[in-house]
Image (cartoon, rainbow, N blue to C red):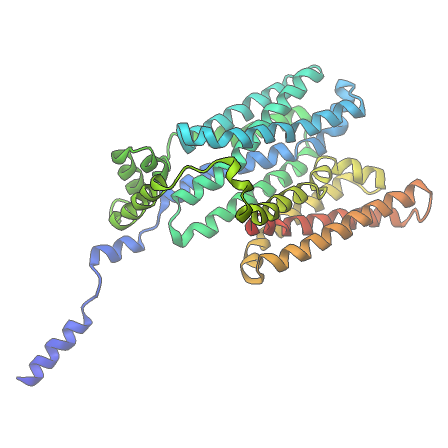
Length: 388
């Protein structure tokens, strides 16, 4: 009798402590999350394609459209002006019409911009196209990481959000490599591809459940979360957590821009603002936009230099994510900032030597090494964004 009780007890211990349906739901792969992330990071790839366009196209555009250096410099810089306005306005757009709606707007601007560049016969159409792609690029930079973070399960959130930066650098690198093989008009058409994939793919994926919950669209919220997690998944706990989060946000007082200037926030604001500003003034945008010109003036083979640049950029960015998590934000930030300073100094020294006809053989080597050291340090300085 005692033995039978013991055996019954052992069988009870062997019984699973969680419901079988819950265990099955946990093992189910979130394929819709993967698909949604792929569609979103097509916008990141489009971002990189816009940023990497001007460098390989510089010589051809100037020759075909008879642009002066000043006119092409304006063409290159308009991308950042457009991106600035895109980043500023994308927040209200994403809050009012949804994350998918904001990505559609971004894709639309990019498509219009690439078409304007492709059909451009003069500087006006070229500049308007560049401004439009810049706006789309800036909007993508805001909405894509937010969308991915809001749809991804906690276990996959870190890895999936990292794809945003990797695809941006991949887009730049692909533009550099393909730009050495095709004309600048064909390169503009190729830039349309990720925008079109993103625009069309948005019709196949659900909206962000967190945004739907925030807007009070409970039925659509539950349907979107169910679609993302799978038919067999138990979404009750996550749905309740999201609803609690949204309700907590609603109860909080509405923050205003002037609140940032309160004494208790001023130190944090200065640190965050300083990191972002000095990151942008580190010189990487100038290097990226005019890489081909830098290599050409330094006397290094342009195509070879751009291909090396493209490959290194993707590899270093991919390695950056695990290094940030292991080494920490601040140490990597300090190392990256130091590398940026050294790289910029070497760039200045190399062209100083060339201007004064000194050490001709060393100029190409210095120019290539400093550009690549800036790539390494600048991709490492993505820790700035994490630190903020």
